[in-house]
Image 1 (cartoon, one colour):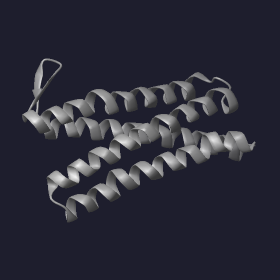
Image 2 (image 1 turned 90 degrees about the vertical axis):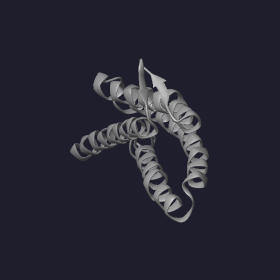
Image 3 (image 1 turned 135 degrees about the horizontal axis):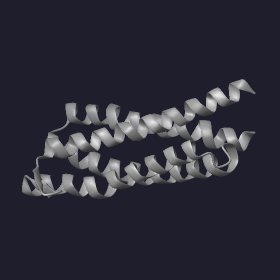
Length: 148
């Protein structure tokens, strides 16, 4: 029982708390106190480290979801895979476009010009979707555990 609650309750709580704290709490504080360029550089380093932590937590959640709790139920397993894929896309492709817009002022992706604000908006949207997926999985597990 402890293993399943570790993988399906504790890991989502750590994931959600860490991402909200850094993504919204630390970021807003840094951009309020420091010049934008300095705050942006610090956030870039923080978010790179958060991305690595997110991959580790999502892989653990994938393991827990598939093998320990849901026994391969497609919807939960699929949601974790979707979150992992979106996190990977955000940490690799989207973050590179953000760097490109910061250095060149504009980025080309999917045959169109993208500004920093547009790319940042896409990144934030993907970030929010991943958080919501993890919250939904935690809610599913909580409802499932409360019924037993």
